[in-house]
Length: 226
Ligand code: MN
Image (tube, rainbow, N blue to C red; front, side):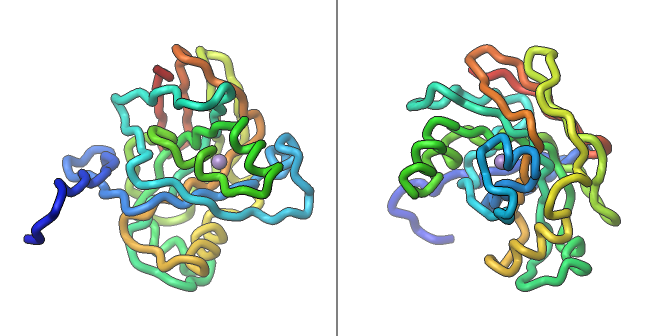
């Protein structure tokens, strides 16, 4: 065993539905602008293709925990997303082989400091402070999966009121394309998570809000902003 100068940080994990062994998170890739209607509500150009950004592995907030309202923002937003959990190594993988890398799927919320994102975008600065903060990735348990990717309804409600209600199959890049595109930019490894982009209807959260999200056939998550 290696000798460390400080205590090594704990390994972030996400539970696997119905199993005692958890999924260790290596890193989190996220797709931006993967829905035409969301791209428009963000003021994007209709020709802009989707792209990637990242969050640290320890941004995950697992079932039973509640995310803290982050510092330095007055406009925290919810983005409900289908999350892919990668279970096999792959680089430069074609779309028709991409789903072979999938361990399973989960439901996630890409929490966003929208005010800091807008300021960064205006100045051409990176998005890290807007996207990659502590507790910025609430996630459900992972459901093991083989075969065709989920295609169904994706919804999010706040205090019982529906805010986002769309269909996974309507996204610009489909699941095989997302995994393939990611594998052209990074060597995907077991433990990687990919947040696949949100549909339209993003909006603000305040302390005390109760958030519930669901992807048909994949699972549900629920948390309170504290
Ligand atoms: Mn997002």
